[in-house]
Image (cartoon, rainbow, N blue to C red; front, side, top):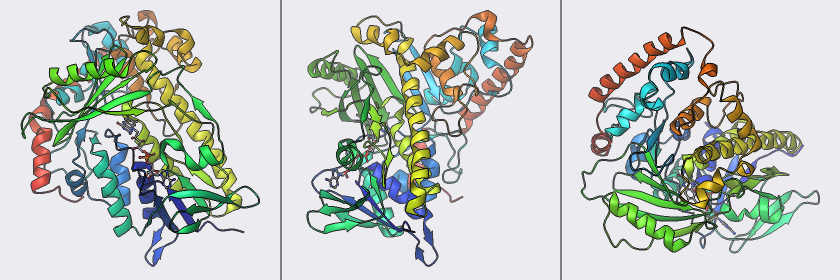
Length: 516
Ligand SMILES: Cc1cc2nc3c(=O)[nH]c(=O)nc-3n(C[C@H](O)[C@H](O)[C@H](O)COP(=O)(O)OP(=O)(O)OC[C@H]3O[C@@H](n4cnc5c(N)ncnc54)[C@H](O)[C@@H]3O)c2cc1C
């Protein structure tokens, strides 16, 4: 029976190196690696170089591959992220905003907080009432204290990072610490076995490189899964229209300018702008629909935003990126599995792409087939798990658009047309008229977005359930009030105890964090 002994990963972007790290860290024994891992990347095609917002899962991923948080923060120009703030998504008024924090609503699984909110506090934004995290973000607070050990949290957090530096950091760690074999060469051909499996990749300088399992991390071109195997691409442009982005790096006004604790996402007339604060600069980008606006108009809106938020006038031209929102019909075919942009990409909203990479790499690690005979069974399960996850990502992203009251452009009007709303999301919206999103709506293990995230976005976007259906219990409002009071007390306590993001990052750069 053919054993799986050598894995060849094609692509040295964040997907390739994260996958290499996750696999190599697992498949090592005291006497050396139990699985050979080679990463092949082209010297002619660089990684995409964007993707600077992560999820809290990144903490576990980095810890599992053995990097220290101090090194990561220092070398990747990383800072702490506690969620996303959405501005002008409901209406285009300047004061329109809501928050999607990482922490679950306080008392979430104990009672119906939504009923309590609607009955007694409907004038307060939902997230501000049920969570202390929006208040921490409003003051640029860090999610932990200087004495909190590496990767541990006082409040749940993820990172903002420099994508270019992240790739180089992972590469160094994977090659020097985890024994990943790195080949800098361009793939020019693919050899197959009689049964259709990939036998080897032909490279320009190193000839044929054979392996048992091939991981396609070749970016949007999807060299192996898409181009070689022709696995169909399921475009989602009819649901989520954005297909272009203009990205730019913006210096701070001063070295000690505050570092934002959340990704700020500000809706524009035909898309939205992300604003990510790193220790040394902001990363800003305008994502938009080319069917609804021109590059020139999108750039004008981007420049207006930058000037309005403290950036300089006359910044250099932004970098243009284009993408086709969608994903592959399947992700694992024969002895080839696609991870990262080669599997799909929808748009940067809610930063789910790297999280899907982490989930894919983790499933590959945990379910690594021992033999070729076991591979098709694992592949079927992998395809089922990730088809479901991509569908949920699409539902959740679309939820941000369908409840808008903006009618200032065709982009927003088209987004609300029922024909553009996936059936399952329509169904959920009908149910949520009478009951809040709950675990009954999302019952798989490792759902990409928990029901609490749906609550934050749904109520942040101004959705109000029918009062009669909000709760069946008469004591919910009293119980909820208790949790709201506790959340307020926690807010005061944490505001007093936590340093700012800038202060904690400066401390880490000077002194480092203590080990767990
Ligand atoms: C505008 C935008 C914003 C984004 N923002 C976020 C975000 O905030 N958060 C998030 O999680 N994600 C985000 N993403 C997605 C994120 O950038 C990607 O998921 C991530 O960078 C992984 O990319 P990758 O490694 O799959 O591909 P790439 O970085 O494109 O790497 C492809 C690799 O394949 C190699 N390659 C290609 N062809 C060959 C060949 N013939 N031979 C050898 N090697 C080859 C290249 O050399 C390269 O190393 C964003 C994406 C876009 C477009």
